[in-house]
Image 1 (cartoon, rainbow, N blue to C red):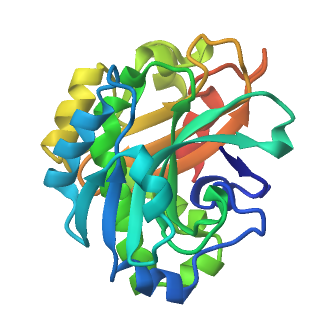
Image 2: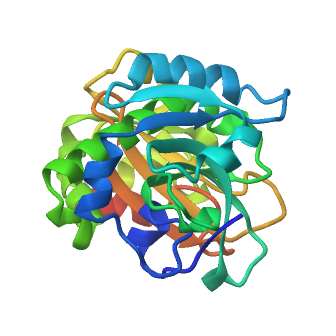
Length: 282
């Protein structure tokens, strides 16, 4: 299991599991583009992930050569610097002091690292709480892989943003949401904004209370007029810790908004009224 020690939200997304608050160096970034990327398949035959990720890689991945390996091969091959890896990992946050566990999608460099959490991450994106059904994130895998690829290109071209707050770079995109339609699932809205009428009171721009199928279609069609919410929450499971809220462009895979809150009676699992207000004021 990877454990996240870093407090800042920068490391919470892009440095899952590195105890030393590590960020990828210019050497790491350059090395990544010389590797062959191995996608680690899941052992669980009941998961759809293996079929989906194979399709996604064929559609989306073009910055390195790639292939697929089993999880049993991963332990041996991850020691080689000629490979990079895309894999899902169980993640927990020591600072949270909860038993919550999350599922992250990692893009990491191989090398002579004793522990999994020592492998340098190029990117790591939260998918879900660990015990949440995969249909909560599977239809968004294409855009998340697209984002990781885009992010790798970005930090190669602009390595200076890695040592700064990379989220300032992405959150600078918030103003562009006003020209797009925000797709959001009804069950991902908190009670105070769980209807179109309530949303309109605090958010004057275009939005649609959409379905998973509509979001998936926008991703497949690379609709430049759509951004959508990627929420990571407990989805009715017993553990309540973090609720991640990421707004992603269906075409460009840019992050337009990133935040999280600790779930409580005041701030439930969902996109909050304050989130809509943040989109307006920023």
